[in-house]
Length: 387
Image 1 (cartoon, helix red, strand yellow):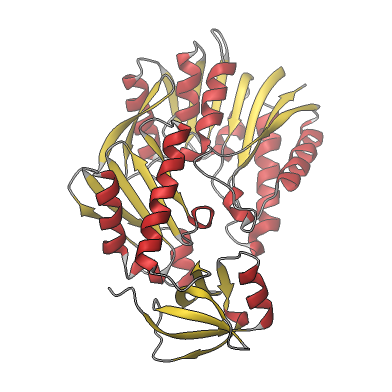
Image 2 (image 1 turned 60 degrees about the vertical axis):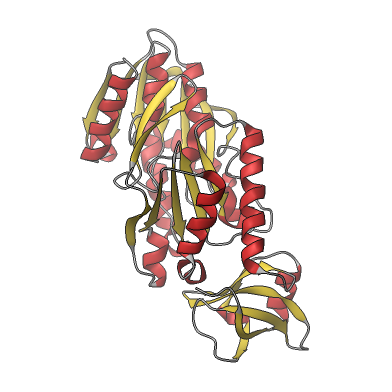
């Protein structure tokens, strides 16, 4: 696929102002018109209404997004991608993250629409840009030359792709290896990048899982809700705690049990919807983890999501022993830190409990935040004491 431009996109004043301010996603409402034979996914020169060049980017024309900005300059776009890939990897290497990490975090690494995760010798690519989709083989080759993985896997089966009408698929682009083992502190996890959720594992919760492990101790009872493959509960068990992991997915529970065996710990897995489990459970726990999926994937779902977050946190607080610890989080980009705090305060009143906030928590540092794109800081969490 060519990296040469096919035409021009003319942007209205507000869109031009945002580009000059550093925004990389320009909405259709700011697109005044196209010049030349421009098709979806083409590279275009971007200009304002006075004819001044604003930069270079992909014409998307899907969903609400018109353009993904690659550069404010008219430079070689492929060479630009190579430089940004190199820069992103250098930062992750400096962070000393071990054998798994997020390599490219979309707008925060100046490649809007692209996610790249690394699990040992497997690289996983996920795109929400038709411009990137049309050049995915070339992008995979850029990654291959820099990292020399055994396999490169495409996970283009995300909800955002479905919402904008992009085809959903998952496939191996290079090699045949789709599972591997990663190490996180003292824990070992098996990751299947084709069958697992997202790209195979939730890298973003790395520091929070390790903190729970540090907080847990011999004799503690730990309840891991929405446990997926047992990250929190296995770290707690390695510290001597007795843990229960609850998830509705058969894959998650079976993989959790395999991970527990890898770590020589015993975690009790319960396959159940969390709501139904909490309705029946009467035991109390020294540490409770609440790590639900994104409940507000769009703005119009925020109100319903707030009700659900409130209900699950209320029920979870009732299962925390007096003076116990709870870690709770939201990975919904439309739920702010402040909203989550208000949810927890409301939940404590409904549960008849008092709270002490022990601090905010966020994502692993390989998920950097770009202040021009606040959704890059999508993961919010709080460590609290429940009295």
